[in-house]
Image 1 (cartoon, rainbow, N blue to C red):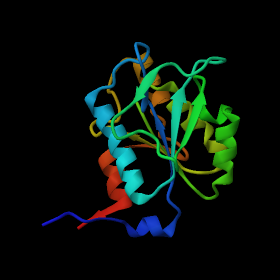
Image 2: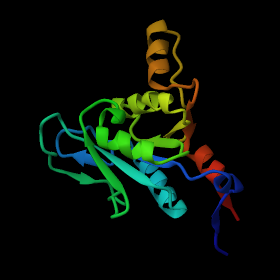
Image 3: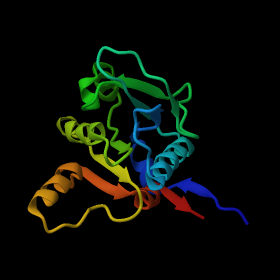
Image 4: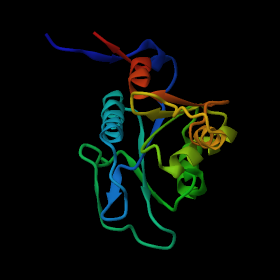
Length: 184
């Protein structure tokens, strides 16, 4: 008996989203190690996006006015010829003119982002997608989406990192997978 994975009906009612991957390129001795949950989520999002033939874009962090530093792509996350790779300084991807032009040229597509929770560029990009009037989903590892704390400062910090308002939402990988796939 085999498992058949097919796109759900909702996928055919709209175009597939642009999937933007952060943290798939790890620079030697500079990037902190990923947790196993973050590693699994990034590789699963890439694998599912490839099966659905969704357009993929990879964000590679490069300090301003410098060449990319030596590093390695995560297993099963090496970009293919049809994928786009954008080198950018820390901050929103919409500050990268090449990315902003590519995003504007893709009509009626929502934006799905994934990467390490600590990646400030990921959340800045999600926030900057609002003026384009398209929904942005941030796919995070399965488990609790919010850190619970009674400290006011900690609650503010969590709210700033995990947006839930307007057109931006955070979702677990399994929920996102169920929204775009039907398992038979």
